[in-house]
Length: 259
Ligand code: DGL
Image 1 (cartoon, protein in one colour):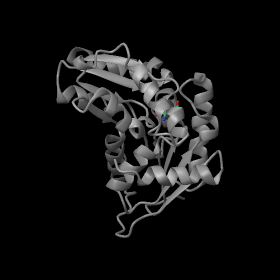
Image 2: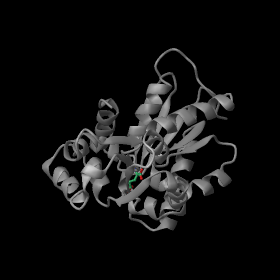
Image 3: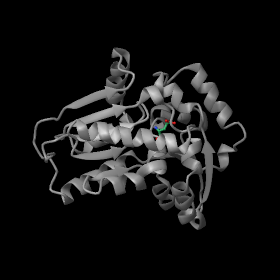
């Protein structure tokens, strides 16, 4: 039976969710974590809805079988496809999903132009459509699907010329002088933030949902009496469906990168 000493389970379709994990570790350093990256099945964002749902349930089962006391769905795609199903299936497990951080972008500057970069699946789902409708009259929200972007991060390519070319092409038809902020609606993209900034410029504010997700998990753990407030630093265990040393090395490298 999981208790406050048990680890927090975190998963993503690959290594992207480590951008959420590092926020969790920063906020709750005394907790232990198990991170599962399903890199062998990545990307999720261009798959069929039913397949993403099945993979997501499998990931939660794996984390619970490894003793997780709570679950962070550190994947916008999996959250948009399956979080309602997960909540029904695991009513007693504190479970937090991630969604594009449109709210802080709108609040920071009302009536501004906001680009939301995400996978095709996230942008297509009803969950995102509802989120967009909620803030529609407070800002001009422009969805920007980015098929192929997460693959650079999966390869550990955060600074290469091909990534630069991909992002230049992505913004080719967008007048960035008229853009106020960009919301990174996929957990892989914060690892490309430096490259994105170098192309769109420093003026545009960039948001992601990692910090808000970590805060929500802390709140849920506290509500359920499951916070581990030990003073020593906790452990992070990485499991990846690719199961290679290179993959685990990439996970450790990404966790240590500056924000
Ligand atoms: N990291 C995932 C997300 O936040 C998606 C990448 C993918 O598997 O397509 O949406």
